[in-house]
Length: 260
Length: 260
Image (cartoon, rainbow over all chains, first blue to last red; front, side):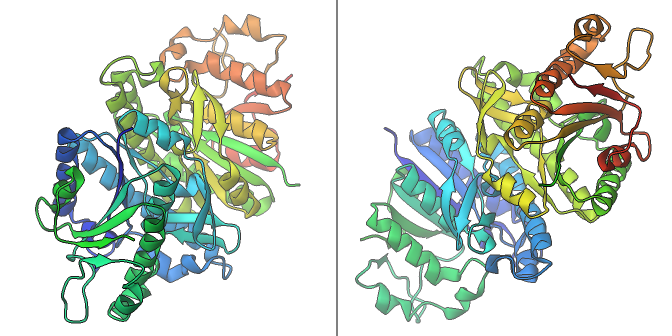
């Protein structure tokens, strides 16, 4: 059985969060090339998910879709956020095709159901068959129907976490624009475990917690949950050339590892 | 229980088949407005599917994806056709949003599995929940994983037929750029039933049979199958103003009805 690795391309690295609907094409293409190069060097199964960045975040904030169906405009928000998120997915898939990969878009909103923003069922047969055939499934942070709230946003971490557990993934690589989790002096925290998490929590920048998918603290908590199931995560800086490729082929790079 | 109606916007009417990736924006927007107007007049559940027209047909023909995994380039074709089909879906969803509808894209390739180009399983929970909440699911002709051929194309007829059976649809409206099925003298055939189908078959233009989803004859055969399950179909001319709206609200218009 080949190793299954799951990669998240953060919305904040592949888009310009300060301007709606702007892609950082150079960054996206470089990361795409590193993914493609690593796949030519090492035989592995790979899922590449991505965040929405400046695409759905404007409409998600306007309609507060992450809070569920809260007023008569919420379903309109659901439709708009789904559309905005899917637009970036097309650009990511286009880019991955251009660098020689075989990306296949996976739309979470049409294939999973959530409860309180956590995925509770997902028809993953298409993804399994794609992986078996060497294809690159590309899911993305999306809206979803939610049995409690009516609707929700499923974050890329939630998506990759669910798939990692369901499909026996070995590790998750989170690609952002910072070196990893930093302490209050800006120093990189190399390893987060259940033992040191409570102490580290107080160091995490609280301003991170305001985005619609919950910020860094929630991300690390999700990854610690996964670590208990044997899925380690690493947060790396995707702006540093070669980092993503090196992690993918199994080399050590600087970053924050989340493990037990 | 509200009536569930399924509409197909033909790829040949919403795109310009002679030029790759060209949308007939005026036609698409008019049809969108008729759908929206009808929904304000009549309380019903609606699914609006669409064909791919000039978007995926170039890549589908190049790679012959409808024949399955036939050579070492087939999976590349799968990825490209999926991307091309999804691009038109974005434009259709954008247009439906603009006219005031609440469209939600449904990507068949990430939610169903086929066998010999027929859908054999589909996770339809998201669609059911969307319909229950007055939303407008928008699936489209797409690639799919296929348990026999490896991959296939699932046509919009196949998609709407499967959903009509699964979700108890009452009728299917096929919107094209001709008045319906024409006989050899170009006269409209008003009704096709299992009784007159064999005779009519000889009148159908065989050149229709060459497109990647099988042409008019296959479409009518699929609709006759559905009629046996109580789902009638009508083929209408979407270029005639008001026709789609009139059919949706239950009025009679000129077209070909397929029934038992």
